Amino acid sequence: MSDPISFDDFMKVDIRAGTIIAVEEFPQARKPAWKLTVDFGPEIGVKRSSAQITVHYGKEDLLGRQVLGVVNFPPRQIGPFLSEVLVLGVYDDAGAVVVICPERAVPNGSRMC
Image (cartoon, rainbow, N blue to C red):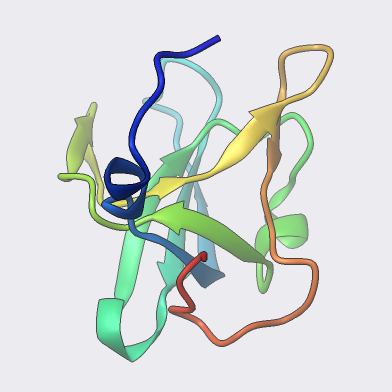
């Protein structure tokens, strides 16, 4: 189990819904990954992310899909690519990532509560 955090600490993590609007290959990544462009609505804007989700998702599976992402981490350089948000997922039994998505369509930029 992880160390406990306060509710105030949790509320500092800004998790928003966004729609994937572009998916590109990322051959320079150490582990197979996609370069994602995600629209998080007018307040946050369009951001890019590298995501190791190639086991379960092809380009056609991702385009137009809503995802949840942490939008207030600092950008992270991943090889030649600057990842601006962290798209959230969980590991399946085989260790592959399954993306966390809203059950129903929500406005881009909606904050997780």
